[in-house]
Length: 92
Image (tube, rainbow, N blue to C red; front, side, top):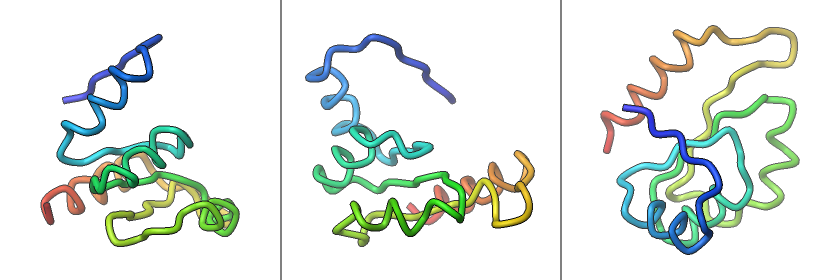
């Protein structure tokens, strides 16, 4: 199931993150950092070329997993990304 929320007050957004089993993002900073601060399993979908930059801001990687939406010279298919997500979710 996919849930899309817009204009949610921050305290409600934080409650949602806190009550989630796994949080998945295409590196929305507040979302990812709040999820990790709350010790939640967090999957970040990003470009391989951006990983070094984002890793500068991720201090605790125990609950953090990256799935690439593109490598340096090619884009990953949506199916491959969803398959990888499904495999990661099964681990939890």
